[in-house]
Structure formats: C-alpha cells, structure tokens
Image 1 (spheres, one colour):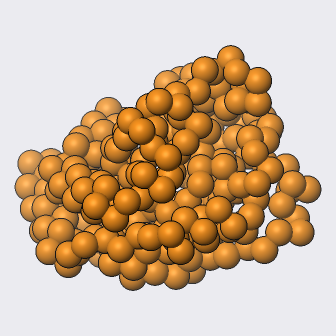
Image 2 (cartoon, helix red, strand yellow):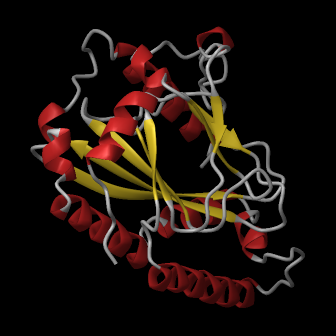
Length: 261
C-alpha cells in the first residue's frame, strides 16, 4: 500500500503543528510485528524459566529490570520489521513529493520504538518539545501506534499551534523529565489522539506534546520515525537552540546515572 501525504497535510502541519495520516502501516507489517513479539515472549519466558503473572506476558519481560530490560529495549529498536516499515514510508514520502515540498535536500530517516506498560506512571513524559531527537532545523516525526491508541490504551496529547512559539526553555528540575511551564500552553487547545493501529500523526518536533497513560492491561507499542534534513543540521551552540543542547546533555547524563530507558 502507498502512504498518501500531500500539500493538504503540509498545510495542516504548518497551521496546527501536526496532521493525521491514515493507514501509514499496512496490516501485513502490523501482523508481522505482533508475530515477532509473540515469538520473542514465548522464547524468553522459557529461557528465563518463570511463569508470566500478567495477561500480557511482555510486561513480565520488560519488568525484569536492570541490564536485561535495557538490552531488551535497545534491541527491540533493531527489529527488521521496524526498519522495513520505516523504509517503505520513506519511499512513499519520496514518491508523493513530501521531501521536495518540505525542502528536504539530504533526507535522514530512522525508527525508534516506545513501549508503554499498563499502569506505569514512571515513564510518562510531561509536556515537552522533541529537543532530544531534533538534530536538524528541518525535522519532522511520525508517531505511529502499532496497537490502538486512545484514552484507555494510552496515547499522545498535543497542544494545537504551539510549534509557532519556537524552541522554549524547559524546566530541568528533573533532568529525566524536562518540561515546559504550564503558562506557555494554558490557553491552547489540547487534542488527545484516538487512532487505530497503523495510522500516523506527523508532527513538528517543536509542537508541545505529552504522554497519555496506558490504563489497559496490555503493552502499547509506538513506532516513531524521525524525518530530518542533514543539510540543516543544528549547531548545538546556535542562538535559539542552545536550550535544546543543554536539556539533551542534562537528560542523557541523568539517564546514564539512573540506568533508565
């Protein structure tokens, strides 16, 4: 299948800071991902020799903790199916003229994955901008739930039009969770995305957004595909983006110290 992204999407992206793209990931790739997760869980539960306590046994694997969980999460990002999805979407974006319309001359495209455990409040992200992944001035992110996303299963909320504020300072009281002061978005419209698996939200990384907790009993997996232009790589010391570099360094140091994913 082909991902349809056109000038209307770009217009919405410029106006709101995000746009929804239906059917970004096909059913075949979604099924392949689920099959691989099931095979991973079955093999690792047997290897570790324990009986799962949760309805979704991936939760048992993820909560083993320590070096095991860190390795599990880092290797999940290397799943072939995620890179196949990323490459397919990049090809579709190229054919649809997205790179040309967005002025991207040297495309960078890479996938990340996020796993939100049922009832886990420790890894929820407060309202922030994507300073950590934004390496270039021309940058976009595709947020793609690989399982249903909504108020029950967990999702993302966004504050309409806040990307137009540009990079804003983040409060660094907790370097693991840099956040934007509420007065910066108190009067802005808040949207919670309710999407089936495979639909996507294309966002401007400067859009204010935050996690919506997973209140279900199943892990929610989200694929995030970065789309950036290497020709516009940001100098970390550049005026206006210095806060991004400062916040990134602080968070990376905290993550390394805490061993946090």
